[in-house]
Amino acid sequence: MAWEMEQPNGQPRRCLNINCAKTAFNLIAETNLRYGLKATIDWYRQNAS
Image (cartoon, rainbow, N blue to C red; front, side, top):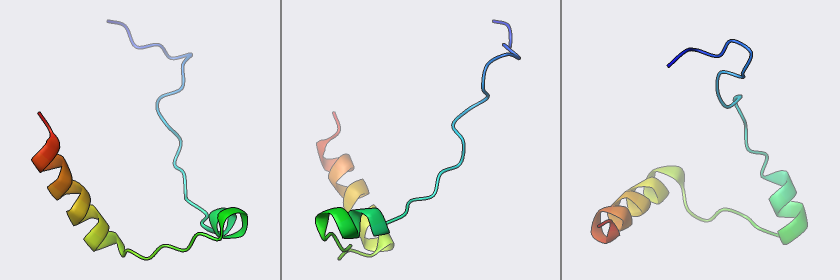
């Protein structure tokens, strides 16, 4: 496989702006990142097959 120098080399870095969600949907995060990641990983481990 040859490396295509003409093609982009991956996804550009993105930062989430929650102000749009807050304004459009009145959405405010109620779960902190550490707990949310743990819950997601636990769910995945129980449901992945």
